[in-house]
Length: 318
Image 1 (cartoon, rainbow, N blue to C red):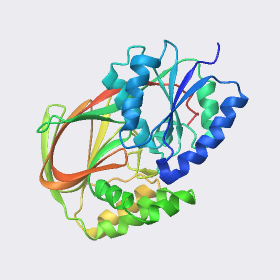
Image 2: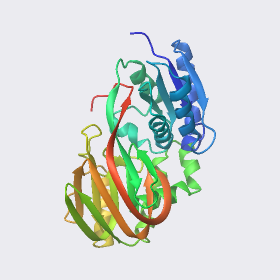
Image 3: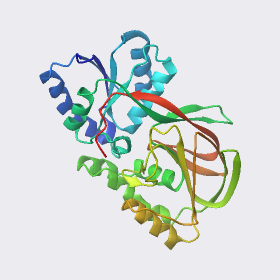
Image 4: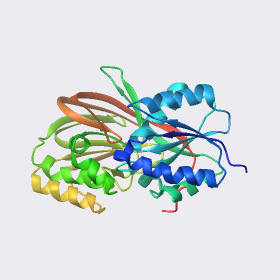
């Protein structure tokens, strides 16, 4: 099978500039391997959405592939653009991670080493179907997608703090981007208060009065490698939702540390639901995050459901 044509969307500021170093490596490899491609540079927030729409509607041909080089936020925007375009040629997405957390790569067994990830892309001969999340805010009607998770509460507050921390740029420069998230954990633990949340799924509704974290995830990871739900699978046609109470600071902190270390956590304060669709409501103002990009602090009433996207790479064996 001949090598397909790649439409490369590259975000040079992803990972506080880490993606730029990744592209330097990948561009040379593409030329050396005589891979045909066109380059599109994302220059401002949401530009990748427009570029993906442009490629899908006017520049792609059947059998070509969109190759994204950036972070999970860039990948999210590319998928959003394809879906908004209607994706008339059913273009799959290839991905070389160059962000801070790179949780999607972890979750789908794609190497976080650029040349290894490129090998996984170039050796593929057919697309692999993966789940993605899709959401709609029921009050505003705003819609979107996620490849990792949609979180409300603790994780979103950590993401918000990490994204605005002055240390994030330095840690990314040192290739220690995941520490930007972990550095905020203890500070947020001592400041955030529990909140009420109502979850409807599988024909049942549950109200949890002292929630501290409410996250719908597509695979095990969030926050730069924290394995929040080890059993979550990105191709089972369902999403996993976890709500964690905070009965006391010590208990919550102990569970959080165990998750960071990759250990399984069982506790009556953890509520886990697996379903193709959820409805989540929070009457109080809370932070939310989508694929590591923070949203405004507000009350949320969200419908989340599973969607699908074709990707172009060969997953590593687990």
